[in-house]
Length: 223
Image (cartoon, rainbow, N blue to C red; front, side, top):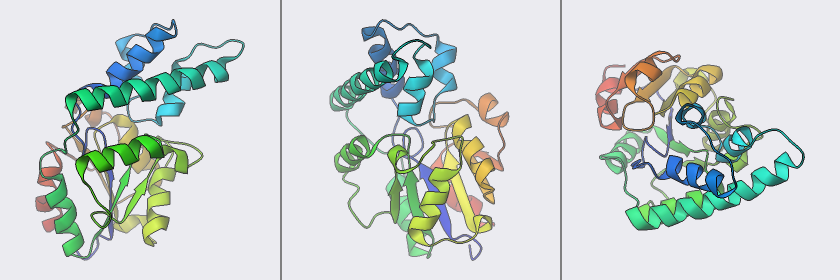
């Protein structure tokens, strides 16, 4: 693992269990504001910054940005209510993977399309305390979310990683893999624990597709 410096993990669906809370909160918020969308439209924005995703789903028209901001506020409220109802849990083995990588001298970062407030609520609910990972980068920390590479670059800057050739990106959506490709990371790993199925991830740029993050250490043990 001497060539691996940093692993950047997505949160929802990759390290945080996805029971459909996010798409349900999106659909509910849009419906509350009189906007109907198809499943394909919703699926196309999975993995993006949630604020950007809402704006993309709000129809063109006068006052679109202010309307999108109101929808986003409703989405955040709906999402947290759903997480409170269903509970927040990690994808099996996430904490062990983080600890194992860091014990081997590999830095670990989380990146997410959630804003800082939602992310903090999730981290607290998971009891992922300070020191478990080296950095947490949120959608509101960058000018553009996925598929732009900025979340990954921001994570690299936060931990002092200099070369994308020593960085791995891990996510469960096409947007995650597009961001990893745009960043030029050496390992661009899709996992099947979240939003998008194998056929979708196989159509995106990737180096590996694995059942879940539990399979990562075997991969890097061979790298």
